[in-house]
Length: 189
Ligand SMILES: CC(C)(COP(=O)(O)OP(=O)(O)OC[C@H]1O[C@@H](n2cnc3c(N)ncnc32)[C@H](O)[C@@H]1OP(=O)(O)O)[C@@H](O)C(=O)NCCC(=O)NCCS
Image (cartoon, rainbow, N blue to C red; front, side, top):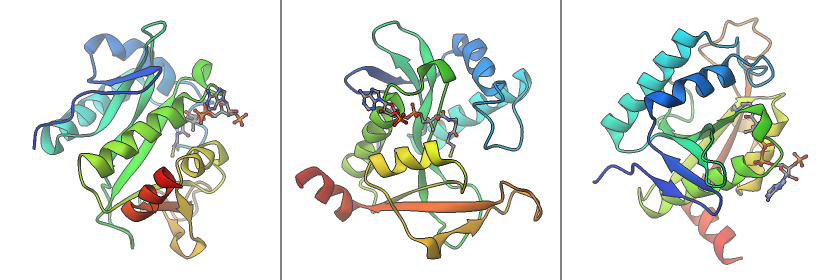
């Protein structure tokens, strides 16, 4: 299949990463508020390495975490996209949807708009049967995005993130799912 390099929504371009995105991306990932539900903010080197891994995912699978650009200002504002879950859990193998936006672009509906666009790509173009999302149980802003795009949470799916230490406060995670059939129902009411 042809790689899906670009997507578009009403207000956003979901595009490939540019080297020039690094300063804004590194600033976002160094912001303690943006990273409060992750183990730690990232150094500039860690952010650069993350961009490298995201590019590698696109090269391997033909989809990934797209860089988000506002059409009105041209600003890089974060990422949203689909990726292969990289650890073993009761729900894997699976494709997850995820997002991270710079703080000055929160509260404007951009995360949900981009998530909706990525989800549609997953079902329409990649013909996925199911998409999952997960986050630490206290990350309610992220769970709101999951709910906004029609994902469902079943407590029986909740899990302990295997990459975090057993006593880490962020370890308990919630899992949200949406199947292709559920997505079609949200489209057609
Ligand atoms: C999770 C995250 C992306 C959510 O961002 P967000 O801007 O709150 O999410 P949305 O794009 O859905 O915006 C929804 C908000 O915008 C408001 N809004 C304004 N204009 C809107 C529009 N045109 N359409 C939809 N919502 C709009 C909504 O009322 C809502 O506000 P509320 O939360 O006060 O009810 C953001 O908090 C983030 O980047 N967090 C840090 C990284 C992170 O935790 N990522 C997830 C890890 S699993």
